[in-house]
Image (cartoon, rainbow, N blue to C red):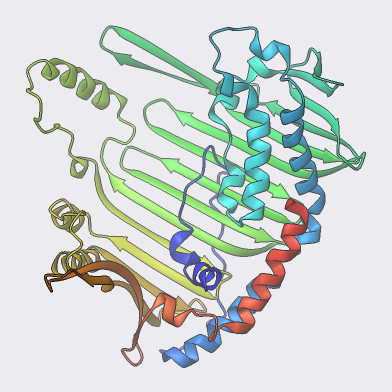
Length: 441
């Protein structure tokens, strides 16, 4: 059952990073502590019982009704942009892209969509054009018969009513300070400036149902720290991204009623991440060599010169922990030589072997250091057929596998996390999805 597989593999797949980042504090989200009660390696049957109890605890934390008002207000605001013309002020510059005028609708739609699909990382994404061109959109806009009426303001404010007649206000306020940088491209110098912070709120019938805060600290060509928090009723998503010359790190968390449900950390180490002068030199060298290079010559850029290691962790309510690291030397050596178009058994098997040598993914329970198992890839026969000549053709693919340390058993994800084994969990998920979908439609 795909939804069960999604839930079971969320720890591995929920590593996407956000746009501009987290709340006023510069501290990264705190990892939830485990119970420490799983002190031995569990066989697959015992692990299944643990996972079912963890899943029940996780699902019961969600209360869709608490987010109903925010979702309805976001949906109605987004729909208004389909019915009303965008403010005339936004189209005064003929050079502006048409897509810019939809940024508020897009933000509202993305936020509602992130809630509906439980992809909470999207709730902290701030539209790039919105951040950089804040002053172009400022003003108070009120819902009219066919368009938005405009009143001058330093903030961006939309006043409207939901289909149920509830008065709402969407408001964005920028910080007083800016961050700025300039880059050279040959003889040209490009300057970039953006607010050091933006606060977005949504008021529904006199009550604040959403608050997003984005703040950036920037030390020119040395470091950047971007923080974002998004609170929707009892649900809070936070993220902190830090960049120095030798490391990029990102921490994210999702909490409900103060309990951290999901916590992730990813870090990439290497060189020249904030060395703008280095990249300016690379651009200049590339332009000089471009005329001399013949068509088909390989590019001079080598990722191994910049990224040396990647590792991360995922923690679900302190109950399930996943750690992973990527051996980049193995990655480049193994995957650059692989023929992705070849679906033969030998080729796919070699790919899986390379993947398993490159990725080291382990999982644990309840916050202990007792390794319960690993995640691997194996080759699988997807299809076979033959023609009149009697010759048989085969198509091979890649299949994720979970391997348990206690007894050495291994299962394909789709076999282990199936509807029969996790019937109760599946029913709980279906009920939760149905409750949420009442508000999306």
